[in-house]
Image (cartoon, rainbow, N blue to C red; front, side, top):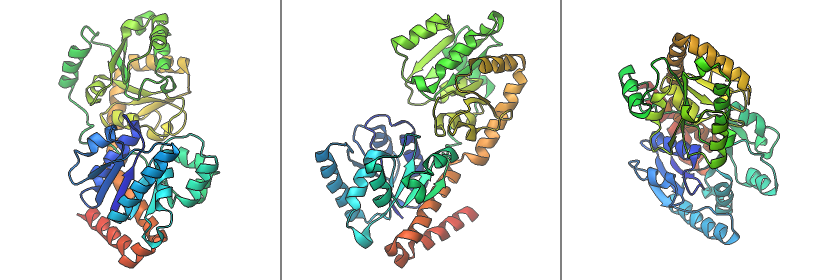
Length: 395
């Protein structure tokens, strides 16, 4: 297949960027993959390092002149390469892909849209995108699919395909390595400390202050044994003042933005994602893949990552008291942390692999081509891809 991935983010791009990079790396060896993204984006920079993947600088801004100019450029790119699939990942690039493919007729590619967030899917432009610019929808969680059920996208073919993680890259490290990393980044930390941390980001809606509040509620003898590690953009003055008001400044370490979050995850005994809203969370799965059990808020798609009590724990959003009680349990039962961490890795190997993620995404493409594209049907493209997937699975 000839696959084009688009994304509008001009900077880091968060989970969108990770999602597309993972798909490009996994599907690139057996398909012709192109990525169109702004030159200033992390996606553009990192995608250029993937062998065999073509990367095109393209901005997806919402001004009328930009939409027209980018739409024409995208149309020329589609006509030049004859893409079978255009996989869009955000509102801006989706809108422009719809405009770019209008009137292409039999040469029009299938448009696959991934719904990454839980923002409302409503409005006139959303209706047009759903009716005229979407052939299949990928939801990153069952929660997302339920959210779309009563929208224009609910009348399209919907598939749930959860994120995959590079299990070779995100893997448990030895106890000796953990000790070395801790001595470097957390000097003087007690031997019996419980290090809890998150790489999910530092926005207020990520709920990291709920963990700080919960630790502050612990009895003094236990509170001193807990240290919090947070990766992401450094907190602003208001956030720092809230931490200080809780008397927690010395027990919180901020790493800042990291090109590689693995050392931060390695420091942890337990990970957490306490978001107020979240569709699934790459960060949660990365921490679990490295053998860290996770505490997640019972909201959005987060519960789909864990089996409560086995490889992680669910707490109510903003449930400081529940989190504090759980921390007391873990402080008194360190073997429970180790057991749950091992279970988190086992689940990751069974359910979170890039191979599963890529195969299920590829299956969406095959179904879409079989159903929508007359040109692909004439070429027998979907059948050839399906046979290739079967042979690959058997080898």
